[in-house]
Amino acid sequence: MTLIFNLIFIGLFAILTCAVRKNSIASWFVTPFATCIAFFYLGYVDEQIPYLTRDYTMLVAASTSYLLLALFNEAWIISVAFFSPLLGYHMWREGAEFLGVEFKDISIRAVFCIIFYAVTAFQLERAKKRYFLCS
Image 1 (tube, rainbow, N blue to C red):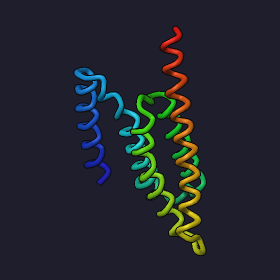
Image 2: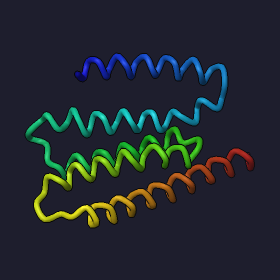
Image 3: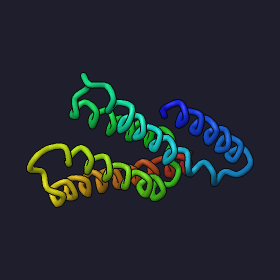
Image 4: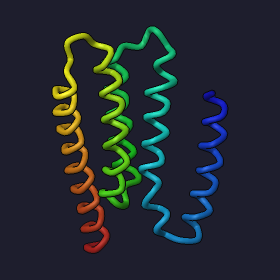
């Protein structure tokens, strides 16, 4: 299963690379695509490794998402639109395995993380554009 996804990701990266060379608007989708890949590997592949803890997985997922955001952010609203359902699903799946964690509690935590991500994405994009205009 992972081999199939790896081949799909390589093909999509090749298409995205060609598209970015032809049109700069395609660069808006680099961060969302890389975030999707990161969540796939953290949500599916790391789930198969028994010695990793849930806290470690969530920490790596958040760190990876923010690193990708800081490096490749072009359009913050598109990044947030891709990040939101991925994080929501990942938190719902992780929370569903714990007893006593309600959907409402997980939803509030996911919304807080999404708002934090959106504010960070907006501020990073604004700072990059301000630096570009002032330099």
